[in-house]
Length: 128
Image 1 (spheres, one colour):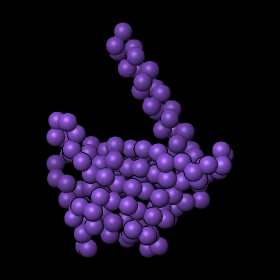
Image 2 (cartoon, helix red, strand yellow):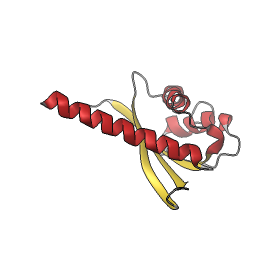
Image 3 (tube, one colour):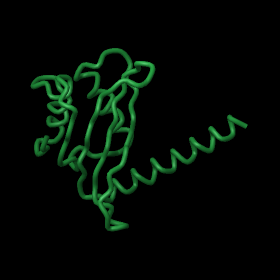
Image 4 (spheres, rainbow, N blue to C red):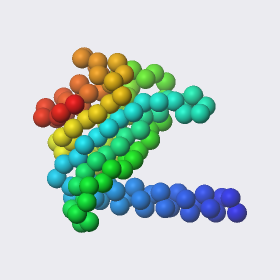
């Protein structure tokens, strides 16, 4: 029985993610917030939140877009690699990201190799 409910949970999660990504495709722009943290067993992860105007329902939405589990180091390059892979696999466009917020960790805001710098390299108009 546990396997069956787990499958339902996975199906529902995939449907919610798919719907959210469809809404993001229709949005003219969005703001992203990133937060790096450890879970209860000390595995590093990064949470990606998105805020955008939902054209269909005519409301602003703020949603958890993804939680990415990080393997190995958590340097700026490592964080950006995980984020970039997710963005590219999800057909999210860098040029639609107008604002980026982070927790202020050095790996996020480093001038040379930080996540903000790497994302700004993809979108020069980014506000962070």
